[in-house]
Length: 576
Image (tube, rainbow, N blue to C red):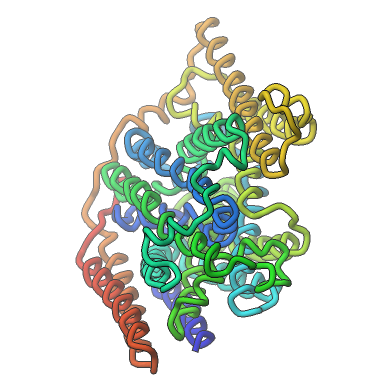
């Protein structure tokens, strides 16, 4: 039954990609939904692209080991999205570009744009490979499937979906996948709390180890404070810059829609992680020896969520849970593939061929590029599954500090600091990357421990957290200093920045909606949502326990109701 549910899910996602093909008439449609997406669609996509199966493997593993401390990352994301809602989201949409590299070119020049294309393309492939690896861990634990097979199958499915339907398919998939994740993870949360060995939220908290409530017992207080503050700084900059972070809002129908969209991930990440954390915390009680349950897994703690889910979910629900994990990973990967393909086609291929933005051949080029990038990402996932030694949680945040943060700092300043000399963004990013690598390979633990007042050696996890925090602070300081020195020099020499005047004029000017055109896409998405809800409703008729029938009916009711609500005409196409 589980296998049948997963097969139906894949067929459904491919069919939905085909259904969205008719909205891809020009490159703007294929790469950013024509700037016509309703606010709720744009917002749910932003939420889904903010996490993947990593949240249920890497993050769950760290929660299983350290309790509530890893939730700091999600709290930092909440703060970041609220800041985005206050100031950045509308301005991202007002940049009036198809890809974020277009914005970088308008702000900093073509040379800087090319620099960001290649550097972020390499990191995009790597991050996609890590997402695949997280999902492979989940499926390997849930069904005993080899990780290499999972990586290949999921990589192929994500690639085909993104290739066929473009940005509209990505948005539609993100919306339905969000509903699946919400329905299944909420069901798992409720069933975990109802377990007789848990006894509700009070019972769960009472049975957890005392160190979960006092993280300073296992991590030195100076390291703990530095780590938490570094996470906050890192996420604010990484999620509020005119680079890849802006792509979440380029699809919005107008400025108001972009701003409203930012509230969905802000509130979603305020509640969601608490729901996802409960099964991982319950595994401490229900499955205290994960190594014995999953002896073939290199880091058994990353199977905490799966171990609990297998104990509490009714028949067939593991298949739906796997679909939810596919959803969480696919939502991040297909969006990343679509963005990367858009950059290569619109910012590399089109200028070389001297093609205009309306050339229909660019859509075909985008599909071919998506397929190639998907193949490379899948190969990267296979490599990481064989050679990874660091936990997924630490691996993700460490890579963010080393690569994403140095690239994001100059793009964070780019929306409000001027005048700046051309080339300053490349210099700032290069200085930041060099600093992060220097800290990574040259930081002496003994000297750091002495500076923090530790009278002992670092524990392994302490050193991981301390080196991450120092990397963040050093990178932000160096990259920001380069930007501020460039700004000070321009002002001292009384040099303006005439090349960016048009860009800032657009950023200041709100995008107002033209006659609705995104409503057709919303209707198709609503119909697809109702169709998948009907499939879950059919599963309620399969022989099961009374609780199992109720779970299927509740999930089906939620998905069908939301699908019916979004079928109404909604969404407007922005002006440019």
